[in-house]
Structure formats: structure tokens, C-alpha cells
Image (cartoon, rainbow, N blue to C red):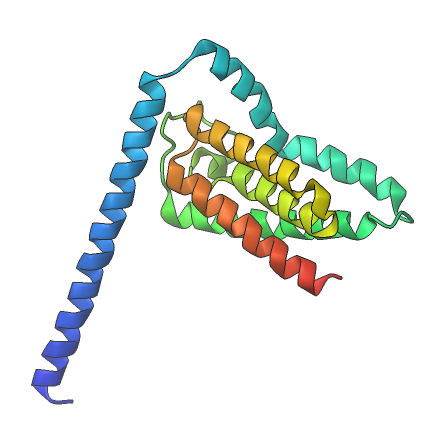
Length: 189
């Protein structure tokens, strides 16, 4: 490869890296601005309500649901439960890897968690889980879709409002849940 071509290729790689870092810096600036806005406009009443609603996305709540639902293994909706469990396992594996690679601190650091990967913020497991559930359940029962996505949006917003995640964490988590749900719905019919 001639030296001139190598220099051009190297120059293009550097330009792409700079473009990506500029975009990443913009996203992080937006994230920080949203978190500061939420912190400055915190309302005790909203914090209590959203603090309760955020638990809809908690892992133990869903594990209990999956366990109870498996008792109805002959019921027609069991395929939905299998899709949710598959999505839960897949999402957990992907999110753990991403969190260890990215290692993004939460907007408001929490007391150290026993589960080390849970100290990191990107992407949001809660947003992933509620988007996964809303999408899969909505695909099986279309008339519930607006209510399911409303609940998913409230839980996702609560993660930002309560300073557990940045906006981009929630967008990435919800997007991952949506994509995973669509894949599982088509694979596990």
C-alpha cells in the first residue's frame, strides 16, 4: 500500500473518531443537563409516587411473576411468559457485559451494591425490562398496548427523575428491550 493511501486512510479514521467523540460529548452534555434539571425541580410528592412506581421494573418483582406464571403451564399465555423469561435472561447477559465495558457511573452514586455490575448506569435494566414486557404483551394483546407502553414510559421516566439513570441510559435500555422483544416474538411463536 503506497504511503499516500495509508495517510488518507489514517486521516479518515481519525476524523471518524473525532466525529464520534463530539457526538458522545453532546449526548453526555444533554444527559447531565437533564439530570441537573431533575435535581433542581425535585418535588417530594412526585418523588414518592415515582419512587413507588419504579419498582414495577424491579427484578425480584418480575422473578416472582415468572415463578407464579409457570404454574399455569397449560394456559395459552404461557408462550408470553417463555418469551419474557428468554428476554430477561438475554437482556441480563447483554446488559452486564455492556455495563462492565462502559462502566458509566450513575447520576447520583448509590451505596455500593453487592452485585458489582449494578453500580453502573448504562444501559437501564428497568427500562429494558418494561419495554420488553410492554412490547411482547402488546404484540399478543393489541388492545392493551397503549396502557402497557404508558406504564413502561412512567417507569422509564422514574429512573431519570429519581437520578438512577441518565436519559441515554433509559433510551438505550428501552430500545434494547423493544428490539429483543421483536426478535423473541418472531423466534418463539
